[in-house]
Image 1 (cartoon, helix red, strand yellow):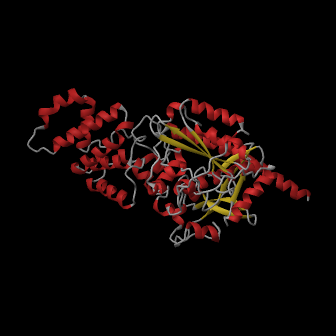
Image 2 (spheres, one colour):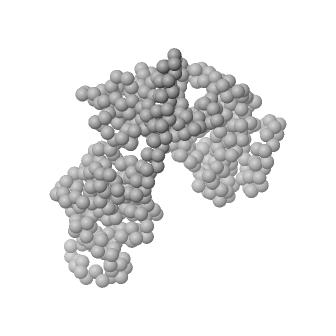
Image 3 (cartoon, one colour):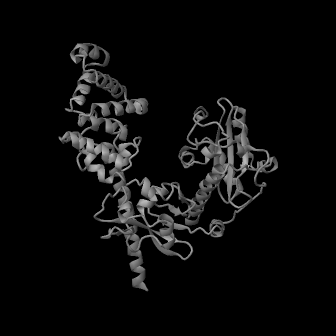
Length: 498
């Protein structure tokens, strides 16, 4: 499913975690209240509860033992954090460990509103290329602050902040590497990575509300695109730590050992999976308590497999002919299962829908409007239609936005018992067009409530984008299988010669 060396653990009869996954330390970290069930760890991509839990092998660095970590946990809590590539295995590992430090220390600094020491000008002058890049930005009208984010020389992290006086906002870039100069260069490069100067209006002004800055949602925003809030306290003249002209540099092997020593000093276990199947060295590194992007409680509260059981039901909705109460019961089920109204249905179901259909923009809230129409509850349909117009209008196509304006009008008219709908039909057609009036009327009657949603079969042929993604993934899987097969054959030959 994911890698040829994955291991599957069948679900237990009592839904307890099966033997062989995780280790004692990981179980305590991910499931401190012992409330996780085996079915919670079936990953979204397979969605195969009959086969069980897919675990990937990681090497526990303290004793080099293999530990199987469920793909569900990796996908829910770590996403891409700790993934890296390099010219050698150690170079990839150093980059991955550095990224873990970068994001962990970034979160600590932002959440605790730590005041950082500026890097002295004499030190900056050692890196003239960086100074020139900063000077160019300042010449464009963007003041730049360069900070030592090592927290007293303990971590290989740099922070560079850009101010935008034109709109009063700021953007903090963080970078990490055992070599001070490399970390500084990467941090400055990150300032404009993937964006131009014209894109610097998406950030937020600094704030004195340290509680809001420390909220997990804000830290999550920083992980996604660094556009979250930052406290004014970061820029105080009196820093919370002294400047340290640190260096953890050496050979890549030495740098790996040095970074690992920092984790050991923090009493953090490191788990590493190395990969070479694409002809380059790559790895994924997990450091529970440091590399997590999302809290462990999300395995229970916001697990990305929550929609797996709904996939077949939701995709078949446009072709269903249920009783009205069954559609309304599905709304209640969505509420009872705790699905956020803002959640995109395609993400909940794990689909690449393409942009040319209603599934692409469909959120749970809009789906509730459709279900209410199908169930004949026009009062509830109006509530969710207006919710949809408020929160989805900006991303709708002109045709879909016009349909919802028409639908809202027809629903409001339906509430007026003393008005004859036929008296308004001609005006509605002139305002919204024949197609929109016809579609909205069919939705209100329950004849066709799932506007813009095509019927989807079990093999998802209705989504060419998903088929393209699957084809590309199969090419990658074939490469993985060839690599692991050759590796297995080489081990067999070596054993025979021995």
